[in-house]
Length: 99
Image 1 (cartoon, rainbow, N blue to C red):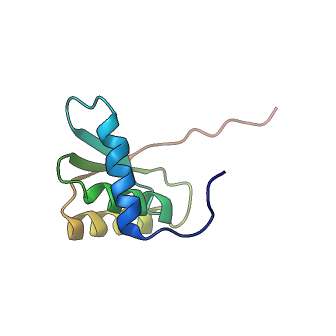
Image 2: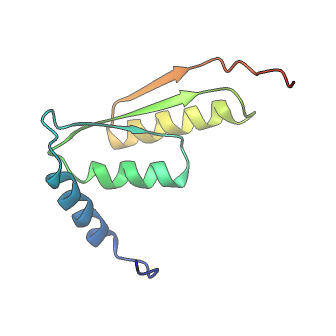
């Protein structure tokens, strides 16, 4: 059973590095789906600590939330600050009619 105690970030970064090293990633390219939420931001931060990978991020601007534009701006600013290439893709979500 996994421990619920918090681990130091260095330990998490090292463990992610070991995991990535165990994969057959021939191209060494990784793209993170970046919503702007804490989970995807932490994942991007951890992967950024492994310079052996060509890292980029993708943000899907779905427009479903009134905050969607703010999330896209946050992702752009974060990736600019961290030097991570970012692709923002606008999508139109077609709502199905009930019934």
